[in-house]
Amino acid sequence: MLTYEDCVGLAELTEEEIEAIARHEHLPEMIAAELGNYLVHDPDGVPKIKRIILDDIEQARERGEQQQQVARLKLVLRQFIATHPSNPTR
Image (cartoon, rainbow, N blue to C red; front, side):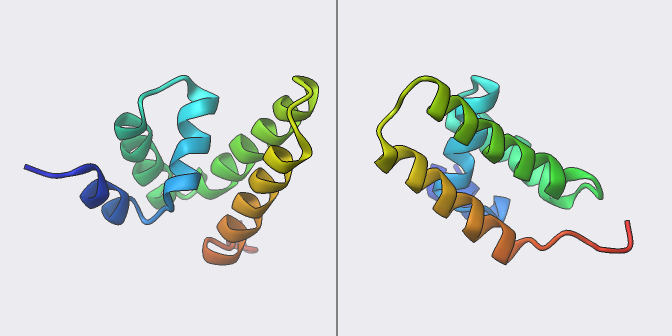
């Protein structure tokens, strides 16, 4: 049986990136890990995940969440971009 940690490792995403997908799509984290895995391997998926995280940042601002939460999401975005650069030829 696979654990959540196994699924995170297979998804090639951090737990924070998976949490962002789960929050945005209103999914349990295990299902968000599966969706994230699919998107990371889809040619158009990396920009979609980036957009999800950007949407989460904007929604956090709109809800008036503490700057600490917004800053944490910005770090998640920075890490995602660093580890999953978009293909410039697409």
